[in-house]
Amino acid sequence: MSRRWIRRLTLTATVALAATALPATAQAAPYCGLTWGSTPEVSTGADTDVVMDVRSGRHACYDRLVVDLLGQGTTFGSYDVRYVPVVHEDGSGRAVPVRGAADLQVTLTAPAYDGDGNATFTPHDRREVVGVGGYRTFRQVAWAGSYEGYTTLALGVRARLPFRVFVLPGVAQSDSGPRLVIDVAHRW
Image (cartoon, rainbow, N blue to C red):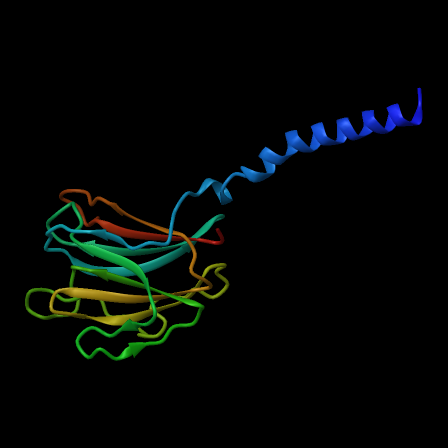
């Protein structure tokens, strides 16, 4: 075989190999199979539940924030979860600074007090509602207040990352009320 023939064969094989490898690279699977976005998640509904607890957890692909409610219903009322330039305190409007490169505002139509004005949930430290030290995405969870039937939390995250919001229903005739769940991915 001539050198020209070997070069042509090598070039043809290289081009064919590159053409088959390109689509696989361009269509890589999303991180952990997550297809979430970073646009606001909003739901409207009516409920009479009150905030009972706020907790968090770490998972392989995301960090999780959970707001537990207590009341007569098994469904969750309204919520609005979105990235904002700064979260503001309910009532006063003062800025609630949080660590991280992005602020996720979590607002729900469930007060942290009962019908008589007695607190149903009071964080031990308004700046550190739950400990998130060592989390990959969460940097801080701060209390922005509970005022006129609304409760707001400021969630400081590492960057503006994809998130999802969903509700786990409560169990009738039990102490298990509905829960608002916010998952924020570790990366895009």
